[in-house]
Image (tube, rainbow, N blue to C red; front, side):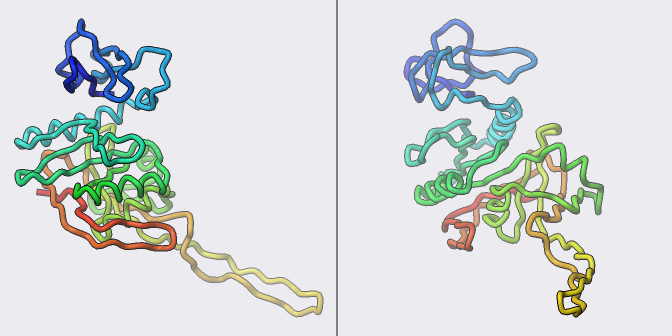
Length: 267
């Protein structure tokens, strides 16, 4: 984790120095400052611990929070990593919380590992009830580059298997597509999912009565695959933030709350 407490005050791992005793904001257990050239500066719980904030976090996820927070600070905005939202269920930390010049809170959730639909909807509705604009940003996996090819200056994957929460995020953003993060280049891509059609080969067989039957010979939309089109890459320094209001919307599978949805817009 990137944040600890020092004498009751929040401190980030980049500002912290070795020597003082640091404590977890959640369980109040002692944590150790980890700094080095090859690792993101962070705090780690002293074992043994059962604190839920001590669960493993990838280097890429910690780096992504720093990338977003630092870019927002460069614009003169207040931005904090791992900001605790008291109205949030479960893990109450927003990956990055920013404040617009008019005081609107904007939560950025950089989703590196899969999250269940119930959990993402609980968090989304909690943000909406608190009047916090929110942006959900899935990570791009290396498989995207292995399975795709360049197209129109971007990237195209004909047979992409979106994770369930990616389908939710894409629907959450409506026709605007969803922003996705490439941890290798620390860049952002605007992704859009579209239906993928597969061809059902024609076949024939004879029934017991000797009648010949036919099937197939047509195209149908796949329930598993989608076509993924990526526009980019964009460095966050070249992206503006908009926070339009959206009405609530439900389908048989998903629910999206009414509220402000933060999204990047190329400058």
